[in-house]
Length: 373
Image 1 (spheres, rainbow, N blue to C red):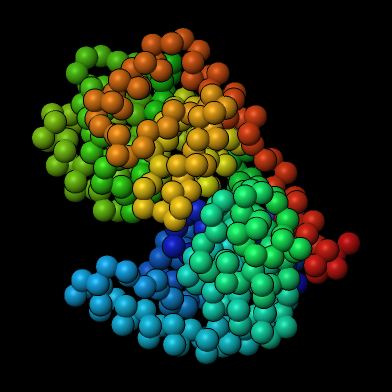
Image 2: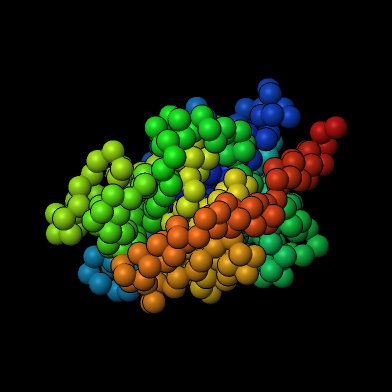
């Protein structure tokens, strides 16, 4: 069986796609799995690192703010869109897939649509309660629709073929040994804090994490803090370190991107991050306390509402960006650390929300679609 998976844009699309590829290989070791995406996107790096063949197709979103720079981008986007149909057809001829799966991002659109028109069996997975435009357009054409939550079913517009399966979490997230992960970091008895704002980096999160790092170093604290700045935050965070008087050392490890997220989540006591669907699924899977700062720049403010579910369960503290300050974050962290056992209890509550069977549910539907016993 040959499978082509299209996903791009963010890790929230790509990592679920890799997880689905993994469960297919688990049940069908001889399956030949290919990926489609942008070479300039993070999908190229993640997919090729995982060892899958990668097929390039350039698809970009339209910028709504009409600055001179964005007008140029929009012209390029329209040009790529015009070429995407023929490129998708050429890809189908080259790969000859039996099944095409879209996991979100603009690249999913032309690839999955082309496959459906050619009579190739198709499926899509929607990670959020408020579906993206691409998946809403594709839902009527594909054979199987997977939704992470019930709230997305009606919005996708194809309830008769939609199954609620949760968000697939990579098997390596479950497979980590916490003691071994902490030992590898030489964490000892320190509280491990992991913070990040996404692959590109979120300026406001970098700013308040800088305030937190300065507080951590004002007096000896038993904390090991690992922070990912994102690609756009490397220089900013270095400048903030100089401005606020803290330094990178054995208690503060700063890098652009977290390559070993599974290990760090296993070692962590507290995670500070955005509230993307994949991040929440992984926090639930490993059972970790969190401070969630939902992105305000997403459709229907869906990160905020997703994050509230963890806060209601006692698993997270949610801080909206409009209310976010360095002092407020410091106070929140200090309050959590001042309560013995608080982070452990929050982690246990997060674990009650996990969907550990998500990948097997997805496989069962795909196997039925492909008539695999």
